[in-house]
Image (cartoon, rainbow, N blue to C red):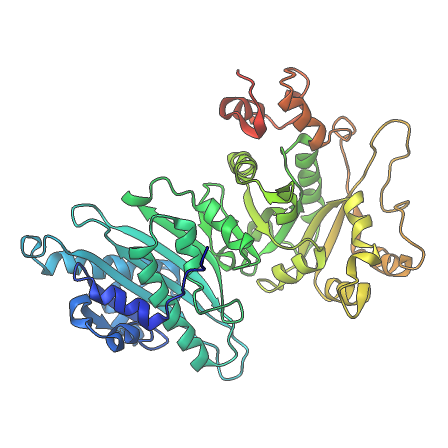
Length: 471
């Protein structure tokens, strides 16, 4: 099969311009009019462009779109206000009877590029409201991007290409939302940008699950982590994590069990004993690595949604990441906050963390990884391990660490960076893999008491995790 040819940004703009039914406005703030210039230069622009504008001055912008409650200009609410206002003006100013076949759109972005001192990374919001049928209501695509080019001019060029890709994808790749998403990286790479949040909504996309699009972002290495809130809505990580005391618990949660909740409750109790932790500023994350979603070498999307449904139903925020190694997770989270963080893990995970073969890809080996951990304000909360009554319970005092690595462990332990958690002996024996096996075998009465209240009912009602059991 021949590989499809990737069109340039100008070629995409020309294809849009040549379609006489596509008609709308471009409004860009903060990084020039980099997107619309592709459409002006491509030719046939008069068929497509109703208006273009850059409401660059803040006071002028506020007079058009209103002031944001958070006082920010590079934010999702500003973008939403921009596309709603501009799309509304299209409908208000154009007589539909004279434009019955026109598919209206309103494109907008609000961006900031890297500063001269290179201390502030460029980022921003981009979106479009568009029709696929003149007789239908419009759809929305909203995304957040982080700009990785080391120069403001290069970042502006990246914005222009991304915007052209977005407009083109909405009209020519809309049949497959995942392909729409992938096409946003045409003529671009992770060296240029990172898309860490996307939402697609509207009458033509009622079947789209934005959580799966979030998963695609991580699978395709468009970003390293995505977050969605308890209502299942994709969130921009910085909006959730900025300056927060972040408490993270990692697991497979297949399914979430009483031992997971016991880990969290005891971890939270210990975490809140810190004077540096503000309960009102705390963000709990249930984090699942991509490797925990793989079965037989492939990502099982249905299984992912099963876990997400349950965690969200319990009111938790979920993060999916590419970070198999803990030091990378800690490094990622610390870019959003300088406040004290906490990490809840089990004994087996901590043993793996101190396995030097785990870091062979690093020039500095395990010392490089723990250099990152030591320089961050983070506490590691250790939940004990006792698989059966025949073995001694394992905790921070008898955890099996190789003698060669033990000095690093002793340093962290003696400085209070590793602390044991209290535990409920009644749930310590529960393991997700055993609960999963019982669920699949429909052995009622044997697993229901191993999961949090209400979870068994959800699993049965929705036939989650391959369950064929009924209430």
